[in-house]
Length: 224
Image (tube, rainbow, N blue to C red; front, side, top):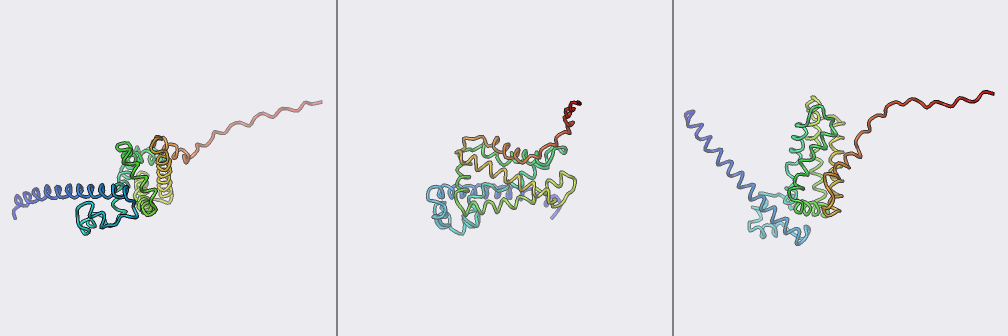
Protein backbone atom coordinates (compact mmCIF):
# COMPACT_ATOMS: atom_id res chain seq x y z
CA UNK A 1 0.00 0.00 0.00
CA UNK A 2 1.36 3.42 -0.97
CA UNK A 3 1.72 6.25 1.53
CA UNK A 4 -1.29 8.03 0.06
CA UNK A 5 -3.39 4.87 0.21
CA UNK A 6 -2.35 4.25 3.79
CA UNK A 7 -3.31 7.79 4.76
CA UNK A 8 -6.61 7.40 3.01
CA UNK A 9 -7.31 4.12 4.78
CA UNK A 10 -6.40 5.65 8.11
CA UNK A 11 -8.59 8.66 7.42
CA UNK A 12 -11.48 6.37 6.57
CA UNK A 13 -10.97 4.19 9.60
CA UNK A 14 -10.94 7.02 12.13
CA UNK A 15 -14.48 8.31 11.41
CA UNK A 16 -15.89 4.76 11.50
CA UNK A 17 -14.16 4.07 14.81
CA UNK A 18 -15.37 7.37 16.19
CA UNK A 19 -18.92 6.64 15.05
CA UNK A 20 -18.86 3.22 16.70
CA UNK A 21 -17.60 4.75 19.95
CA UNK A 22 -20.39 7.32 19.92
CA UNK A 23 -22.99 4.67 19.16
CA UNK A 24 -21.69 2.43 21.95
CA UNK A 25 -21.75 5.31 24.43
CA UNK A 26 -25.34 6.13 23.43
CA UNK A 27 -26.46 2.52 23.91
CA UNK A 28 -24.66 2.34 27.25
CA UNK A 29 -26.33 5.54 28.43
CA UNK A 30 -29.76 4.26 27.43
CA UNK A 31 -29.23 0.92 29.20
CA UNK A 32 -28.12 2.78 32.33
CA UNK A 33 -31.21 5.01 32.17
CA UNK A 34 -33.56 2.03 31.85
CA UNK A 35 -31.79 0.21 34.68
CA UNK A 36 -31.95 3.21 36.98
CA UNK A 37 -35.67 3.71 36.42
CA UNK A 38 -36.32 0.02 37.10
CA UNK A 39 -34.25 0.12 40.28
CA UNK A 40 -36.15 3.18 41.51
CA UNK A 41 -39.51 1.60 40.78
CA UNK A 42 -38.93 -1.97 41.93
CA UNK A 43 -36.01 -1.72 44.33
CA UNK A 44 -32.39 -2.55 43.55
CA UNK A 45 -32.31 -5.93 45.30
CA UNK A 46 -35.48 -7.18 43.61
CA UNK A 47 -34.32 -6.51 40.06
CA UNK A 48 -32.30 -9.20 38.25
CA UNK A 49 -30.05 -8.95 35.23
CA UNK A 50 -32.75 -10.73 33.23
CA UNK A 51 -35.25 -8.06 34.33
CA UNK A 52 -32.88 -5.34 33.19
CA UNK A 53 -32.31 -6.96 29.81
CA UNK A 54 -36.04 -7.45 29.26
CA UNK A 55 -36.84 -3.86 30.22
CA UNK A 56 -34.19 -2.59 27.81
CA UNK A 57 -35.30 -4.91 25.02
CA UNK A 58 -31.94 -6.66 24.69
CA UNK A 59 -30.57 -10.06 25.53
CA UNK A 60 -28.87 -10.76 28.85
CA UNK A 61 -25.55 -11.29 27.06
CA UNK A 62 -25.90 -7.94 25.30
CA UNK A 63 -26.58 -6.17 28.58
CA UNK A 64 -23.53 -7.84 30.13
CA UNK A 65 -21.34 -6.57 27.30
CA UNK A 66 -22.03 -3.05 28.54
CA UNK A 67 -22.31 -3.65 32.28
CA UNK A 68 -20.78 -6.60 34.10
CA UNK A 69 -22.96 -6.18 37.18
CA UNK A 70 -26.12 -4.42 38.31
CA UNK A 71 -23.99 -2.07 40.39
CA UNK A 72 -22.03 -1.00 37.33
CA UNK A 73 -25.23 0.09 35.59
CA UNK A 74 -25.79 2.69 38.33
CA UNK A 75 -22.21 3.65 39.15
CA UNK A 76 -21.40 4.35 35.52
CA UNK A 77 -22.71 7.84 36.30
CA UNK A 78 -19.48 8.41 38.25
CA UNK A 79 -17.08 7.05 35.61
CA UNK A 80 -14.21 9.35 34.80
CA UNK A 81 -14.55 11.52 37.89
CA UNK A 82 -11.12 10.51 39.15
CA UNK A 83 -9.52 11.50 35.84
CA UNK A 84 -11.33 14.84 35.71
CA UNK A 85 -10.39 15.74 39.28
CA UNK A 86 -6.75 14.75 38.66
CA UNK A 87 -6.62 16.83 35.48
CA UNK A 88 -8.17 19.78 37.30
CA UNK A 89 -5.55 19.43 40.04
CA UNK A 90 -2.72 19.61 37.52
CA UNK A 91 -4.27 22.73 36.03
CA UNK A 92 -4.37 24.64 39.32
CA UNK A 93 -1.86 27.49 39.85
CA UNK A 94 1.56 26.24 40.91
CA UNK A 95 1.70 28.52 43.94
CA UNK A 96 -1.64 27.28 45.30
CA UNK A 97 -1.44 25.00 48.33
CA UNK A 98 -2.52 21.38 47.89
CA UNK A 99 -5.63 21.64 50.07
CA UNK A 100 -7.00 24.65 48.21
CA UNK A 101 -6.19 23.00 44.89
CA UNK A 102 -8.06 19.85 45.95
CA UNK A 103 -11.10 21.89 46.94
CA UNK A 104 -11.17 23.72 43.62
CA UNK A 105 -10.62 20.50 41.67
CA UNK A 106 -13.69 18.97 43.35
CA UNK A 107 -15.82 21.49 41.47
CA UNK A 108 -15.52 19.18 38.46
CA UNK A 109 -17.31 16.46 40.44
CA UNK A 110 -20.17 18.58 41.71
CA UNK A 111 -20.78 20.18 38.33
CA UNK A 112 -23.34 17.50 37.43
CA UNK A 113 -25.24 18.26 40.63
CA UNK A 114 -25.81 21.79 39.32
CA UNK A 115 -26.63 20.68 35.78
CA UNK A 116 -29.23 18.09 36.83
CA UNK A 117 -30.05 18.51 40.54
CA UNK A 118 -33.08 16.20 40.50
CA UNK A 119 -31.30 13.41 38.64
CA UNK A 120 -28.16 13.74 40.74
CA UNK A 121 -30.20 13.67 43.95
CA UNK A 122 -32.07 10.54 42.86
CA UNK A 123 -28.83 8.79 41.92
CA UNK A 124 -27.05 9.78 45.12
CA UNK A 125 -29.99 8.69 47.26
CA UNK A 126 -30.19 5.31 45.52
CA UNK A 127 -26.47 4.72 46.03
CA UNK A 128 -26.48 5.74 49.68
CA UNK A 129 -29.64 3.83 50.57
CA UNK A 130 -28.54 0.58 48.89
CA UNK A 131 -25.80 -1.23 50.86
CA UNK A 132 -24.42 -3.08 47.83
CA UNK A 133 -24.21 0.13 45.80
CA UNK A 134 -22.77 2.16 48.66
CA UNK A 135 -20.03 -0.40 49.32
CA UNK A 136 -19.17 -0.69 45.64
CA UNK A 137 -19.11 3.08 45.22
CA UNK A 138 -16.72 3.53 48.15
CA UNK A 139 -14.54 0.77 46.71
CA UNK A 140 -14.37 2.55 43.35
CA UNK A 141 -13.77 5.89 45.03
CA UNK A 142 -10.90 4.38 47.00
CA UNK A 143 -9.17 3.77 43.67
CA UNK A 144 -9.24 7.53 43.00
CA UNK A 145 -6.57 8.11 45.62
CA UNK A 146 -3.53 7.06 43.55
CA UNK A 147 -4.55 9.33 40.66
CA UNK A 148 -5.06 12.31 42.96
CA UNK A 149 -1.85 11.63 44.90
CA UNK A 150 0.07 11.39 41.63
CA UNK A 151 -1.39 14.71 40.46
CA UNK A 152 -0.38 16.34 43.75
CA UNK A 153 3.14 14.93 43.36
CA UNK A 154 3.38 16.40 39.87
CA UNK A 155 2.34 19.79 41.24
CA UNK A 156 5.22 19.51 43.68
CA UNK A 157 7.60 18.68 40.79
CA UNK A 158 8.14 15.20 42.19
CA UNK A 159 6.46 12.99 39.57
CA UNK A 160 5.60 9.53 40.80
CA UNK A 161 2.98 7.76 42.82
CA UNK A 162 2.89 10.48 45.46
CA UNK A 163 4.04 10.58 49.05
CA UNK A 164 2.15 9.42 52.10
CA UNK A 165 1.14 13.02 52.70
CA UNK A 166 -0.29 13.34 49.20
CA UNK A 167 -2.34 10.18 49.68
CA UNK A 168 -3.63 11.33 53.06
CA UNK A 169 -4.71 14.68 51.63
CA UNK A 170 -6.43 12.96 48.69
CA UNK A 171 -8.29 10.62 51.05
CA UNK A 172 -9.33 13.52 53.30
CA UNK A 173 -10.62 15.48 50.31
CA UNK A 174 -12.77 12.53 49.22
CA UNK A 175 -14.14 12.21 52.76
CA UNK A 176 -15.05 15.90 52.70
CA UNK A 177 -16.89 15.35 49.42
CA UNK A 178 -18.83 12.40 50.85
CA UNK A 179 -19.80 14.23 54.04
CA UNK A 180 -21.00 17.23 52.03
CA UNK A 181 -23.04 14.96 49.77
CA UNK A 182 -24.55 13.18 52.78
CA UNK A 183 -25.79 16.50 54.18
CA UNK A 184 -26.99 17.65 50.77
CA UNK A 185 -28.93 14.42 50.22
CA UNK A 186 -30.45 14.52 53.71
CA UNK A 187 -31.73 18.03 52.95
CA UNK A 188 -33.41 16.76 49.76
CA UNK A 189 -31.09 18.99 47.77
CA UNK A 190 -32.26 22.19 49.46
CA UNK A 191 -28.88 23.05 50.97
CA UNK A 192 -26.16 24.63 48.83
CA UNK A 193 -23.73 21.84 47.93
CA UNK A 194 -20.92 24.30 47.21
CA UNK A 195 -21.30 25.86 50.65
CA UNK A 196 -21.39 22.42 52.26
CA UNK A 197 -18.21 21.38 50.49
CA UNK A 198 -16.53 24.65 51.43
CA UNK A 199 -17.50 24.09 55.06
CA UNK A 200 -16.22 20.50 55.04
CA UNK A 201 -12.85 21.56 53.63
CA UNK A 202 -12.64 24.51 56.02
CA UNK A 203 -13.02 22.14 58.96
CA UNK A 204 -9.70 20.54 57.97
CA UNK A 205 -7.91 23.63 56.73
CA UNK A 206 -4.59 23.94 58.58
CA UNK A 207 -4.66 26.83 61.00
CA UNK A 208 -2.17 29.55 60.31
CA UNK A 209 0.36 29.88 63.11
CA UNK A 210 -0.49 32.76 65.35
CA UNK A 211 2.00 35.56 65.56
CA UNK A 212 4.00 35.74 68.74
CA UNK A 213 2.45 38.30 70.96
CA UNK A 214 4.44 40.08 73.65
CA UNK A 215 3.70 38.85 77.11
CA UNK A 216 1.50 41.24 79.03
CA UNK A 217 3.30 43.44 81.48
CA UNK A 218 3.01 42.18 85.01
CA UNK A 219 1.95 44.78 87.49
CA UNK A 220 4.83 45.99 89.62
CA UNK A 221 4.15 45.24 93.24
CA UNK A 222 3.90 48.30 95.40
CA UNK A 223 6.98 48.77 97.48
CA UNK A 224 6.40 49.60 101.12
